[in-house]
Length: 194
Image 1 (cartoon, rainbow, N blue to C red):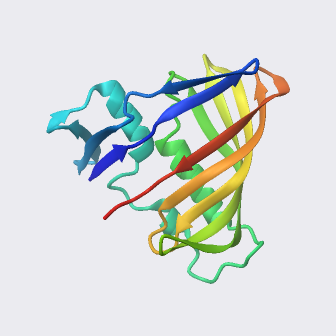
Image 2: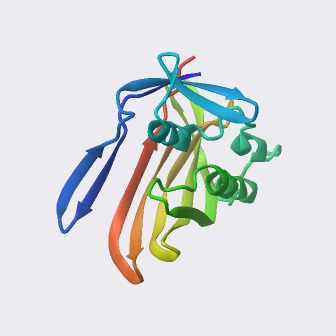
């Protein structure tokens, strides 16, 4: 599978000053191959730099594995306004097993997840299931709790294949034990081509 990172950056605001850091995968194409239970990341037919491969695998660590979100989707109709516990549990497992390294040697874990169906919408001819997702994400560095994020926002999944199309949200931050020390906004939009 080929993937192109059109935009890939981190934006941080501290003391009212915004700082945007472009990550080294932005604007580049990588090839992924699932082989012997591992995912190989190459560019131009050669192995990608290990640090770059780690960033790519942060987004595509489940490549070649069954889609947990689709598998967790109940086979019975979902009710608008009702929690989908199986989907919440799958999201926790997906994140905590495959995407928990924060890239700094720290560990991130997701818990207290609630996913509630809000409805459906169509985008570019694709039917999407729209959920509200609330979750807590805890970052630990050096064995100590560094930051806790309390995020609420939309989760949009392709109805046909269960792939996430959009994950977003906003919420309060607890930093180094200080409650409500800031806010965080998360937006991730995925575009898939055939």
